Length: 286
Image (cartoon, rainbow, N blue to C red; front, side, top):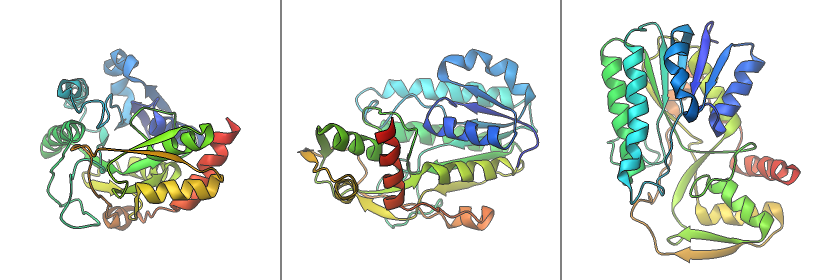
C-alpha cells in the first residue's frame, strides 16, 4: 500500500468512488477531483505520491459522430502530464480502455502486446492519451497504464450508452425495451468493481511501476448471454429491440490478464453470475 497521499482525478465516477472508499478504509489520505474540480489540480498535486487518472467525458457512442469531444479528455491529460514533469517521484496510474483500444484483435484473449487498432473515436482518444503517457514514461517517470474491460457492480449509475450490465438490469426492473446494436453475439469481457478496486489499490502500492496491464475477467460473454443471465436471475423477461450494427462496436474482445497476475498475484474473484446477482440485489434496494 502506498505511504503517501493519493489523488483521484475523475474520482467522482463509478470506479473513482469505489477506489476512494477503499483508500479511506485503508486510512490513506485521498483527494477526489471531479471534472468540475480540475482547477484544484495544480495546488493539490504537489502533495500527492500517487495520481490515478480516471477522468473521461466520452463513451464510444457519444463521440462517434463528434470526434472533437475527445479533445477535452486529451487536454486534461496533457495538463496533468505537464504538471507531473516537475514531480518525478509521483507515480501516475492512467486508466485507458481495454474494451476499445484493441479494436477487433486477431486472437483472443488479447495480450497487452497486441496492436493498438481502435474502431471508435473514444478508443482513438484513449490510444492518443496512452502515447503521451508513454512519452512521460520514456523520460524516466513512473507511469502505469491500465486497460480495464467493462466494469460493473453496485454503485454504478445509469448512463446512456455506457455500462451494459447496469443498463440491462434497469430494463429488467422497469420492464422497458433493451436496444442492442447488431445481432447481440458481440463478445465482451466484464469485470466486477471489487476486482477493479483491488487491482487499483495494489498498483498504487508499486510507486516505481511503469508497465501496461489488461484488467478484466479473462472470460468472454455475448450480449445475448448477458440478457439471458439477467432474465434468469431477475425472473423478468426482457424486451429486446435489435438495431443495425454500428461500425464503432467491437465484435469481440476478451482480455488476457496474466501479466497482472504475474506482477500482483491478482486474479478476478467475482464471476459474472455472482456479480450480476449482487448488482441486482443492490439495484432493488435503491
